[in-house]
Length: 326
Image 1 (cartoon, helix red, strand yellow):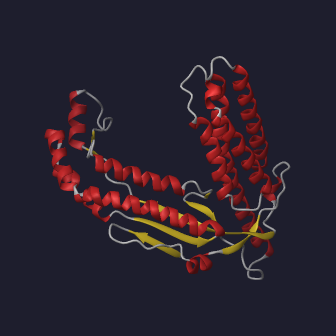
Image 2 (cartoon, helix red, strand yellow):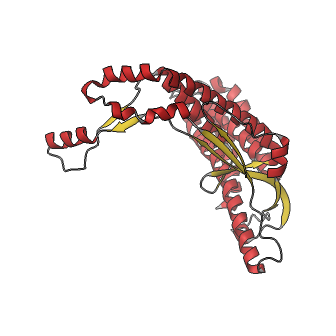
Image 3 (cartoon, helix red, strand yellow):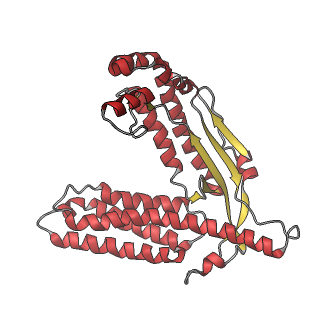
């Protein structure tokens, strides 16, 4: 396993080609059967896919603390049953440096989540995209680390501000965990996609089951990618008919083009049909985005009707593609 760990003082980049080559293995691809649910019962047959699994962690900064004593006092004052109320105090409320650090951490997590999810906590990354992805993710982690350090450097002032704002509810003990801010951590772990058992070491039945399990996981990951696209498309298709009546934003259209581009970029196998569909959707919604004002116009309903028809047509194609993963 190749691991990159980052804390408040050090960063190790995990994208060199040496690490990449050691991490990457060819993995057997899913047999392309798109009628019924046959693909779920089809083991991986052919090595067409090379990729890795990535696990990413970025710690959270302290934001709230429960106050048991205040909770009990409030329960008593309100004649509430013991354990039914929970008084929670917001720490560092309104601190701009804390907000900036939180925003950068969220941005790094969101970038990681653009990859197709594999199982509960890992994502799949194509071998030829690994270096670019790790470079971009490390840049976002570095931005988060820098923002966290700025907040950590002002921690004492932030605590003094809380002392004023929380009044009698301020407790020094609530801030013991805040020392972890100075040792904020994130890490990236990279490992090869699991291959089926080595031939001859286990029975044919066990090897088949292992291959089936991997095939199912990869199908689920691809289905989840398409569902992201479908959700954005569905939102746009429902919003376009009311564009002249609501605060319709161009982002409702440009977001579809962006997610189509992202899905094609992170797609981990050679599914030319899905890549072609993504390219078609991106082109369509780039054109629709350029005509946002016409779609919003109260006087040219034909433009809006045409846009709605195009959005629904693309949505139908995505729904059809997703039927193979249902």
